[in-house]
Image 1 (tube, rainbow, N blue to C red):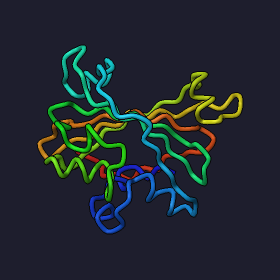
Image 2: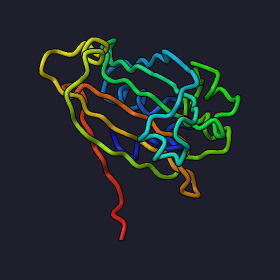
Image 3: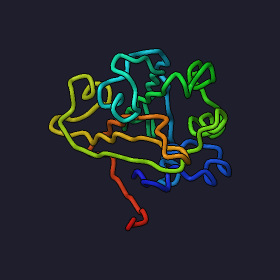
Length: 178
């Protein structure tokens, strides 16, 4: 169960020292595991260009992470970080990001997550997703296009999460803005 805005709590991350995914899975009585399979420079996809206000063809740091609950693959997340944000920090150079994971490393370089935008859709998986996520036939995926914003409401990262529809749910609790 993905716990919406609560998953990015700075207090929780500081107290527990885990990533949002690890906190959620552990709270649900399962054993979390995450594998960073690659950290590389790549051109930003069109929807990421739009969200981050980049130029078409601009290179970003691309981080691909696979997530497991009790050794069962449940989702993949591909994060895109502007070079102006990542620089030569561990965000651009390390697969293992240490205590507090990616959002602690963003804070280390001056980007504190204060707001998020998540666009959620469902679709049928690609053949690679079916294989990688060990999905049974006919199961859709949930796709979450997540954008993090700092205190100045400037976007500083976009992550595309692709989640097995049969093993994931979304639970959001947010204030209503007038």
